[in-house]
Image (cartoon, rainbow, N blue to C red):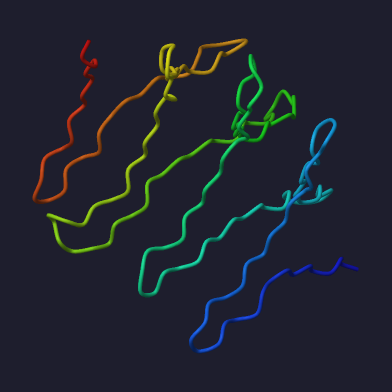
Length: 178
């Protein structure tokens, strides 16, 4: 038999209200690390592993909701703020005929479905190194994957083809001023 679902939700709002907030938090620690929050899906013995989905609300009369993720700040001298690490899944089968492939890490800006060419646009994908008050700002480091038995990966930078009324976008690399 299957295990049952677990649903955690607040009720819908009344006519003139807003829906409630769900807060999941660990307590403050006076000595040592504070507690972790672990959310995960189970292992499957005869199918796919379960997905982990964050679905943010649609704004019927306003913007859609954001996803905001912040690593921890540190107030300790000589320490660094927390990292944000996102890693796609490993294909761990070493079968010689057709072993496992690594999962892709994909970041997409949102689609813009508006019909006005001047003010409707797709969402950006923006990556920036961190600000530094005294030292140099954070670096952006991109490199392809190492191939143990064959070649390393391809580094491909390209703009998309133009639509019917436009031109293809530029590739621009510009150093900052000194």
